[in-house]
Structures are given as structure tokens and as C-alpha cells.
Image (cartoon, rainbow, N blue to C red; front, side, top):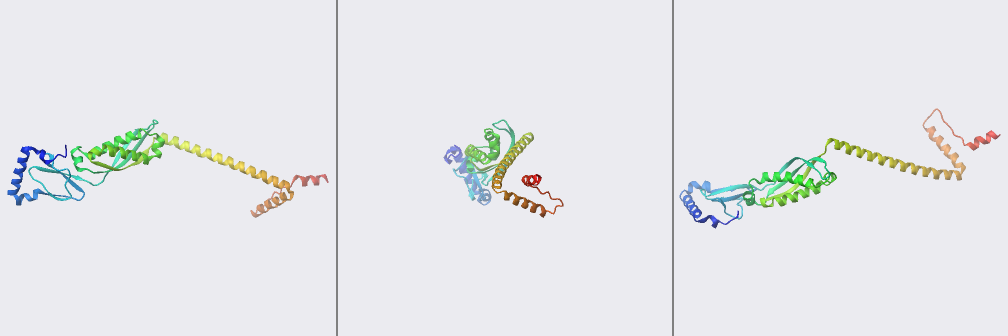
Length: 264
């Protein structure tokens, strides 16, 4: 057990501890600078006495006492650390190769576990983040990778937090920074989007033509009921043309008026 009690030192260990205490007592004015240690507010100290962890809880912040001959300390920083996940070439579920990178924020939640259970908690977390990114994105298709970044980040955070719990690491946040697609795939997607926009434009134009034809049909029915309405429409058209100061004006005449003069 990495958090065993002091009593597990054994008889020889206790003899060495007593001798170390006697040595400190007789050389007190000199060893005072070695016996007292200070850790910052954001740090904790894990004390090893003859190679064993002396307490279930790390020391600090502030000042504490150690025996110079038998005790050694390891300082652990509790501040949040961030690092970039290098771009990873990943094959998605629908067999598309993409390059994805991200950023991870983590901190040490258990100083004793981070020292006793893993050689280098920071480096191990970085390597695990890279493999977790590959594993999570390998189960997603391209559409999900592009549209569900928040869900992917949350899934990565849960996986990392669970895996690093025994190391005394708390993963606070994971973010997907960039998703890079192959150039040919970018061109294909751009062509697909352009074709989709053109198809929608044609549908909208066809709907406009249909609505216009219906309106013209209704207008023709109204004009057919009142022949004088057509003359008013002619005059309105002439008024519009005259406002533009044109030198030539074409005035249309209805066929029934021309046929009346031709009969005479």
C-alpha cells in the first residue's frame, strides 16, 4: 500500500529514525535550516521516510518539519496545466482520413497517487490523450466529427478522467481545435454545396414563375370582365415609359379597335 502507516518501517527503520532525531537534537542550531521546509499555496509535499510514504495526506501549504537523514520530499504542483494534442491522422468510421488536434486542461487532485502510482503523470496524460482522441474519433463518421465537436470533447473528457483517476489526475476540460480535411475532399464538398444551392435556386425560381402565372391569369380574368380596365393599363404603361424620357414610344393598340377601322 502506497499510503501505509509509519509503523511499517520495521525495527531497523525505527532505529534509524531515532538516531536521526538524536543527531538533529545535538546539531539543532545548524540543522534547523535542513529540517524545516516551505511549500507554496499551489504546491503540496509528499514525504518519504526511508522510502515509505509517512502520511495519508500530503503536507502543505506552509512550513513543516522533516528529519534530514531519513526523510525526502517530492513537491507536486496543483495548478491547472494545459497542453496541445498534436495533429492526429485518424480514419473515421466511414473511411475518411482527417487530421484532428485539440487541447486538454488537467490538474493533480491527489498528490500522493500522482507520485506513487505513475512515473510521470504529466507525460502519461499527454500520451493517453493522443490515443483517446484516436479511439473516440474512430467510432464517428465524418458528419459527426464536423458537427458534434462538443459531444466528442465531452466523451474524451469522460474517458480521460476515468483512466487517469488512479494517477491522481483530474481532467477538467477537453476541446477539439481544428479538423483538417484532404484537399480533394474539400473540393468535392464545395462542389456538392454549390450544386445544392443551384438546385434550391432553380426550385425557388420555378415557384416564382408559377405564382406569377397564377397572378397573371387572375389579372386577365379581371380585365376580361371590364374592357376599360385594359385601356387604363395602357395609359399607366405609357406614363411609366414617359417618365424615363425615352425618344421613342411604342403604343400598343388592341386588335378590336384596328379591325373596326379596317372594316370602314
